[in-house]
Length: 416
Image 1 (tube, one colour):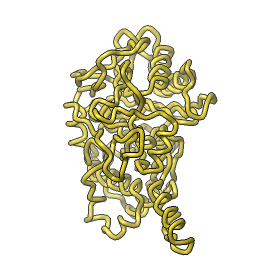
Image 2 (tube, rainbow, N blue to C red):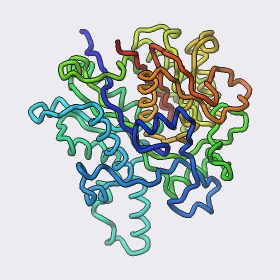
Image 3 (cartoon, rainbow, N blue to C red):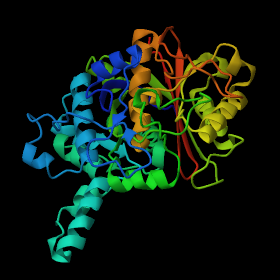
Image 4 (spheres, rainbow, N blue to C red):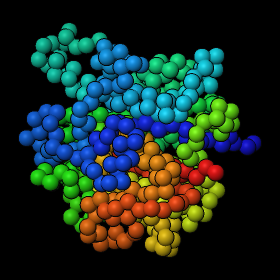
C-alpha cells in the first residue's frame, strides 16, 4: 500500500531569540543570542543564573485568544498556542468545519505546566488545601496545549501530547507524519512547547549539575562541541509546523517549505539521564530515518544536531553521526547546533529546530554553531563554527535526544 506524501506548509515559533519566525531566522543567521540573566525570579541562590528566558511576552494574539482566557493557560500552552496561530496564518489554511475530523493536533512537551504546579503548591502550603485553584490540573496537564489548539480551530481529529523529554517535539512530528501517511488525517498541527524556566525547574537541573555556570558571560555560555563548554542552558519556547498530505496542499494551492520524508525513533535503554557513550541508540535512529526516507547517507547535506553543549551529549552525538554516516561524516556532511543561541528548550527544541531547517532549505543558508572556538578532542566534524553558510542541500536531518534514552530523528527533502 502506497503512503501519502507529507509536506510542511506553515511555520510558527516563540523562543528566547524571537517571538516569530522571520525575526528568529534573521537572528539565527546573524548570531544574536537569546541567552540572558534570569529576571523572572530571584536567581541569586542558584548555581546557574542565566538561561533562555522569553522576555516582553504579551501572550497569544488577542484577536483570536481573549486575554482572560490566556491567563487561564500555563505559559507552555500560551507559547504553543501563539506558535500554532503563526503557523496556521503562515500556511493560509482555512479549516472547514464540515471536515473537522480530518484535522488533528499533536503537541509534545517534556514536563507540561510546571509553573502552574509550583504556584499552586506554594498556595496550598501557605494558605491551605481549599485555596488551590480548580484550574490547576487543566493548566498543568501535558495535553493542555494540544487540547487548547484543537478547541481554538475546531479540530475534532486525534489530539494528544507526546512526552519523551527533549525528543518530545520530534516524536510529535513523527507521529503526525505517520497519521498523514496512512490517510487518517489531511492536516496536523504539530510540534512542541515547554516552559520549565521556573524556580523548581532551574533547581532540579542545577542539582543534576548539567547547566552552564558561566553567569558573567551569558552570550557565550552555550558552546556545543567547544572544549571550554560547561553545560547547557535551560530555555523555554515553542515550535509548531503545519503538516498536510501533498494532495491536500496542492488542492488548495498552498506554498510548500519542504517534504517530510523520514522519521526514526529508538531508545538507548542505557541510563535515565546519560546518553549511551557509544551513541548506539542515536545512530540507530538516524539510520532508521534514512531507511524511511529511502536515501543513502551521503544524500544528507546538513544535520541540525541535538548539540546541547554538554560533554557527554556532544561526544555521544558525534560518535553516533560517525557510525551512521561513515567516512562521509568528515568529508562533506555539515552539522550545526542552533542551541548555541537559543539554549535548550527541552520538549520544544525539536519543533523550533525543524522550523530552522525549513527556513534553511528555503533560503539556501545554514545556521552556524556559535561560540565554537576550540573544538574539544574527538569533536572533529564540520560544525559550521561562528557563521552561517550559503549552501543549497537536498536533504536535511534534525536530531532530538532526551532523558530516558529517547532518540527521534526527522528528515526533510527539498520540494521541487
